[in-house]
Image (cartoon, rainbow, N blue to C red; front, side):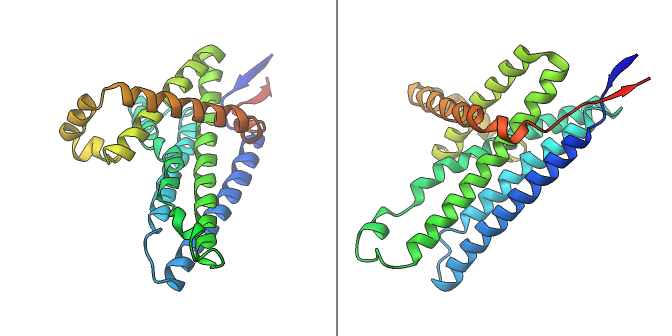
Length: 237
């Protein structure tokens, strides 16, 4: 009798390793370009890209841990903590979409058009933001596969859509109210007060727009990132 067993399959390991190497290489490139600019031009104004990119790696790491712990007989409390932590840090991946606002348009338009500096900065932005988006899409894709395997396609899609909406709302909180993921633990009362006061039409519109953007990116790229990520392995008995 054929029975589907939960251990991670070989396809999963191969895809995970290949994605890990690719995104690690992109991250090294982004960090290198940022620090080269900082050293050559004696400027630290773009070092925040490195911090934001590091934060983008956290939900990816949680995803890999969850995809393994999901199938093992570990405490459900531990698994719940991992999932909640993943949801809290996931918005950091798509938050970098808003980092474009920090680019100085005047640097590209006036006087310094032939300088290397603005193009070095632009390269750092492109690679950092693209890597962060890939990490977010991959994390969502693996989460959807897990949910689909255990709860069905429809439930998986509904939950992932809801998580994307939460991410978009969290991006608003981070960009406009300057809230951070860790304030869920370090300053929950302050965070709750900000959440209550943030409920307005502008927040809803921003959340809607960014939900559409993230869903569009996810639908466009997740099939290419997740297609070989097999979470089950068939064995015969």
